[in-house]
Length: 522
Image (tube, rainbow, N blue to C red; front, side, top):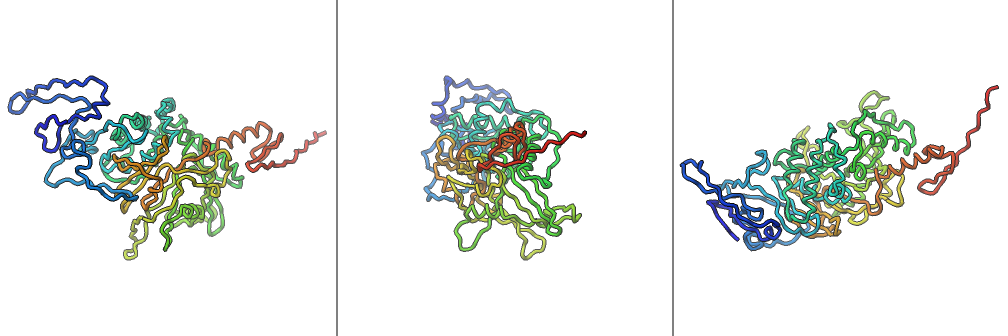
């Protein structure tokens, strides 16, 4: 219902029926305000603030016209779509509201819209100015169920670490909690995640602009920031990195994880971090270095092959497990040779967390064939064929595997990219709803139903997987630590016991010799 057009060329004040329906208070129109400070001295009548269901909208937008009036039907495709925002060169953008920091939201400011979402937790997100990289990641991590419930139930409040120098004083955690509350109220069809964007930008200046960014970099920063804000360790001790030095792998992994827990312990450590075994070998003298490092995502190389329509994810995992030789830019210092060498590096997964993020390395740097010393950034556009409902990593995991929570995963989110570089183009997301199990396609504020197979395009960039059966804390290390403590109480060590024999994962028992009593000196 159009109300007024107060000298505005492209906008009109309207009542939105759906918002009136959701508005609980009695709708009263406040009296206008008399302004006597006009330049010509005349008394000017200024309309007062309107209730939430009255707002200015674009005169030529879909909100006051019949649906699809300004759109033409297009053939549906499975490839990620790209939005092109254009404006007539002769017209200046109408400023609906002042931008908060003179950077974000300049021009047309998009606000949250009340309405019924397609499904619980499935809400469109406004693009705040090339913020599709952020929207794509938020849609994916929103459906990490244990973490989302942790925020919605308010459990995070008792673990906010305001004094962590590596955190934000709990500000990012608070902003993310507010974002999740709005997503899951069921009252919004579209949200403008402005508070979260501004809070992140305050502590990560690289995102304090309207440029496009790499969604993988934003995902890494956001999850690290939330982890530090919720770190249960209040005082971090200095911890030196440990090398195996001839230790058994199981013992070295255990000690490395314990050192990690001295500085890092949060719900993100519980569910999203695992360990891998890093093995370096000097090509000159053969010196070895074995360490166990913590990871929150796995970067997989893509090796396209001719005469093949797609790249199987298994080939990416095999290439990751095959190892590589370091180049001169990543040379390793060999203490025996007393120099940096291009070592042979082999990384093997020791265990995997409940939530596994796979990063497909689509963006590479290659030497220019015509100009010496110049690097060319290239994107690998080949489609990757990845499992939707069953990704079995059993053959890639070196450490103990829990039969009650095996390393078998199902896909629940894909961050997709179209364009030539990670810092340009457009990001979308295909997400499996954690409540109804259906798949939805998120293109900023536009949301529609789809299938998991639709995400298998040349734009699939980040894959989010969740364990299908059971749940283990610390990627299974908690159970291993408890087992070790039990063995120590029984009088044995990690590899055996003096009392009752302990079975390993395969059902075998280690036979140990009894120690002979030393005869007393006479």
